[in-house]
Length: 196
Image 1 (tube, one colour):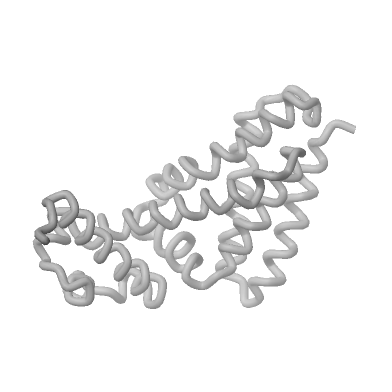
Image 2 (tube, rainbow, N blue to C red):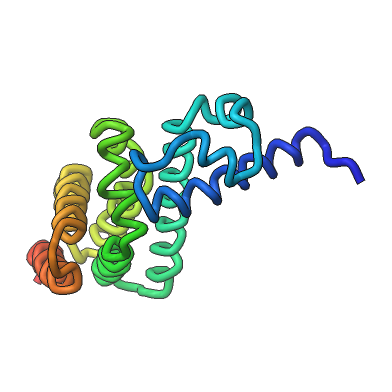
């Protein structure tokens, strides 16, 4: 049975992204050539440039997918919690645990800012993380758990703190210890904002 053009495109992109994710996680962006990517994915170099405009574009697609998957995991892990501040703390724990994994560190925290540039990486990070934080804080205000304050500013401050905590964990000689310390510190920040 002959594949449609749309199905063929989807299959080519899926092969490229799967192979790229595995190799980028293992060795990092700089240590991987475009030739190696297309050879392992069994596609042409033209396919790489047609669909992604090169290795950097493919890497950006991998980063986007990893962020989207992490976002979905955060939503799943926090959906059952009625207290939005506890959900926020739980989500932070899940995020920081994920950032303790070498593959996640390599792709999201080491290579993504370097390859995509700080501004583009921050925009991608904000697209996923900021929305969840804002949503939790807004729900907390609606429930009377937080004072009516500048939710947007607080969301940005928490996202910045969370991002820095993830970077500290990624570069720590003891990621598990750094993660636990970061979780405690961020939970304290959130609890300090709670209405007593």
